[in-house]
Image (cartoon, rainbow, N blue to C red; front, top):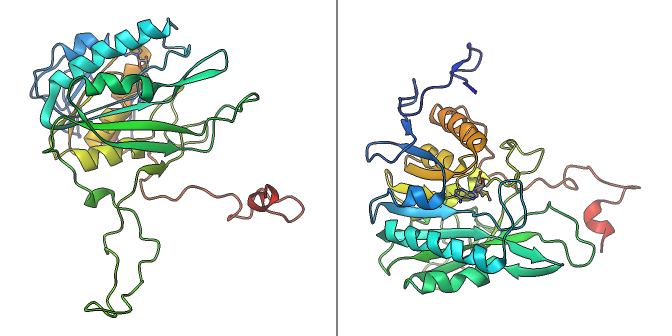
Length: 321
Ligand SMILES: C[S@@+](CC[C@H](N)C(=O)[O-])C[C@H]1O[C@@H](n2cnc3c(N)ncnc32)[C@H](O)[C@@H]1O
């Protein structure tokens, strides 16, 4: 692996984990150290979590394997899978700070065309530890497998739990544009004044964010990586600067990329060395402001609005009605 230093300059060898990335100020280490900015542990999630001190994490955010036979997992009986998840969740709760949040992003386990929504199966494991569900965020995207015997899946969910009632929640950095920003009060003491918050509105619990498919700027060779903007929203809203963000199944390091971009620290694990190699490269680029990401405020691309996809002059959005 090679790391780009500046656009247009010569590439240099990868820094040895544990050193400071030149020009970036971000130190990446392979084992937990309280002074590191990023920990990328090669191995099992539980092995990393057991090295983290209790109460470390402001946020645990992850997308675990779904046990559906992806290249990075071995499909096991659903009960065995759920027991593995239970153990990881237990450790995550231990490392979570009293003001902290856990966000578990999952889809469906599928067997013989029957689906098991994993959030439903996992919910009791969080409740068992007294965590409180704040939102079940629906992440809607438009691309994915086409199903022939059921409706194609176009959403997954994020269960957002907090450890206590006193938790970090900063909504201002994740506000989205108001639908009617110039609406004014037509009666009462605020007559004639703007009625909506000029900083934008609360983003709600249905997030329309493109998933990382082939033409996405963030696409790597990982088959199921998070979009950075999805993690950015959670990191900005649920942590403060310098907080630790922990991802036990970190893949190609999207959570670490978000943490670095937003001035937080990150510890994550993955069992696939190649994914961690890519993660280290992405973190180094992000630390230097050179990683290309899809911005959080970019509207979803609409081919019809851009005059594309029309057949015989009829746009795709009208054809299906
Ligand atoms: C859904 S992917 C996560 C992708 C990640 N959110 C990203 O943006 O790259 C799940 C990851 O869990 C990893 N994994 C599977 N079993 C694991 C284990 N026991 N410990 C740590 N990581 C594991 C896989 O290699 C895979 O990269």
